[in-house]
Image 1: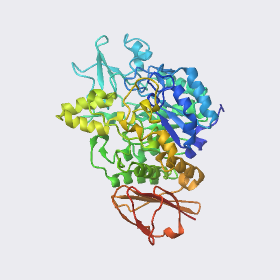
Image 2: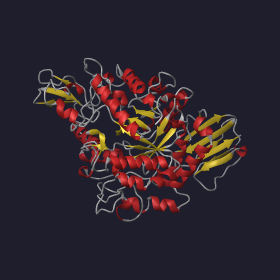
Image 3: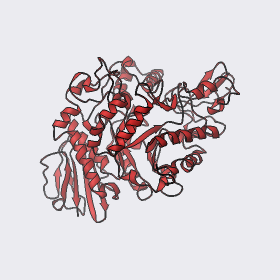
Image 4: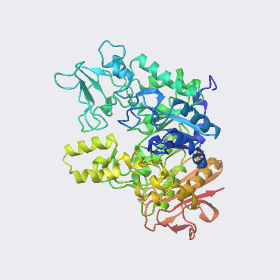
Length: 562
């Protein structure tokens, strides 16, 4: 480990592509039905073959799994479900030997209620750990304020022993840490050093913009969900605390950070990620491009709107260019499968390839979620008791209170539940999709695994899997894809997403159709398709007439011009 290397001078994270693993559902290596570290190690060569450069692991820490790892009971140990700390050290060594960097999930807005800090904090008001969390007296028989949790429900839980409430912006079992306490910040720095000294290459920082709450915890604007967010989103000391973490720890290691930030805009993101001496994070995940079929969250659905999607992507591409770096994903553990949302299950292969091209050809570090590379789709579980996700269960209760019928809520859940992304990875057409040798996997496996699986995709040269490999190789070999500027065309089209990139005298035109209909496409002014080289496409025999063509269902094309 190089000491004294300034984090913010590093740019290797710009060139890399990242593969996200949600460990519980990736691969079971010991036959107990649950994904684990040994299973991950067994698939490292496969991951490397995708032409990615890093793996981001959703939490592997000890956890009671009320929110599947995002409720951490011990930041310095590995969950028994996944293995041991020695197993993890082996994983880091094996990944590094293949040129793969390792990124940990850092969840520091809250812990599990089973964490020793919280157990101690409940014992008495004068316990040294009591101030590690946000405890407050109620107002008579009411909570300290009117805040709501982002996992629907009240944000306060009463403790009879202490006669106080604790704050939890997520599930009841996820009490918020009091980051205003300097001792808590020292604990966080110690945790960072622990994993960086083991050899971890960086962190994805969960809801990091929530860690600073407004003094006095005033009432929020009364809305049904996330009431009070204006008092903790980008809170009063957030930049101070992130700078402290950077200066005291991160700047001493050759590592990188990406923050996760609900309700984030490019303008606000630049306050965190603008390159230079005051930069606090390297990149920022946002949610705006995942709201093209919903309002704020997938449970509040609207018809898919391509113009909304394009506006989100274009604003981040143009407003950050030359100032800060983009991180883009279209799937992760919190989002339903993208083909089932923005693409077409009827044209699964075509739309899966188009969606890959659409975002990987933008200026960014692309993140690919497990199973995305083979075109996995939503499972659409029909009954509430089949779901595991706490967010789904809490949303069911909230929608029920709002007067929705069971049938209507289940219809929404089939589309919107995070469990759609958490079904085991489909490795082959054998029992349990090759995920486990146990009689039963920990969670339901999508019945379409007999057709959609890695083994079948490996044998098909035209599979989504092999397209991802080719696309990521193309990105590595062409700096224009990584570093070029961006200009959108066909802005008023509700069917086509077209943009150009320019870099060092080269030009690239990216054309994406979001419909199964034939659409007339004419090249933008200044482009002559006959002089361009077609370098990526999802159809073998693309026809071009003069300087345009009629698109095929979910067609994508990338042209390069010298």
